[in-house]
Amino acid sequence: MGDTDSKARLRRRVYGLAAVLVLQSVCAVFFVGDAIRDLHFSGLSGHDVLEAAVAVALVSGIVFGAIEMRRTIEQAGRAEEAVTIASGALGTMIGEHFKHWQLTGAEANVAMLAIKGFEIAEIAEIRRTAASTVRAQLTRIYAKAGVTSRSQLVSLFIDDLLGGPLPGMEATEETSSAER
Image 1 (cartoon, rainbow, N blue to C red):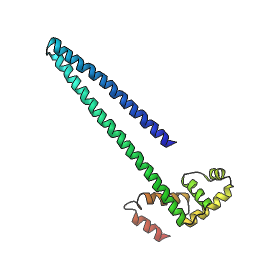
Image 2: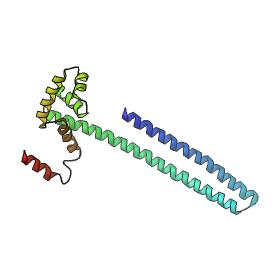
Image 3: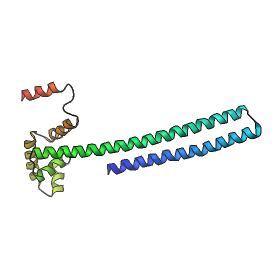
Image 4: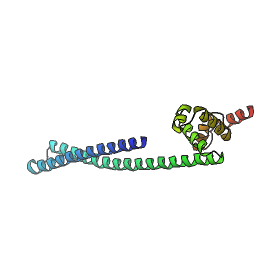
């Protein structure tokens, strides 16, 4: 749903930019035509020079606006593609962890819902099971993953996405591990 909303917003922005470029083009045609007509009938005057400068500035704005609009559309496409790739990579990474931890299908489903932020009661309702069953499954998931809480479980995936712990935090984590 969020993906559809962002595509709709991008589409509206593109249509808005296109409408402004069309309006600027109509204005440019008017100014260029008016400047040519004035030069033909009355010769060169200060007013005509000003109109010609405005026409040149307007046409330049249209050209640069069109170039920027094209770049923006291309950049948005690349960003959307990167998000799609990252989303798929995250899903693959999560799946690999689940396999490594030897989660059952039900545990993997519960783990994914927990990672997505659903509360135990919500997970139980979605899975049509008792909250106590979900709690027991989460306990097994945490044990298999080597963590003690949902936040630690999510942190495992964030660490992987970031390429490991943040710079300067290695010593803190080693100290924490040594203290346990």
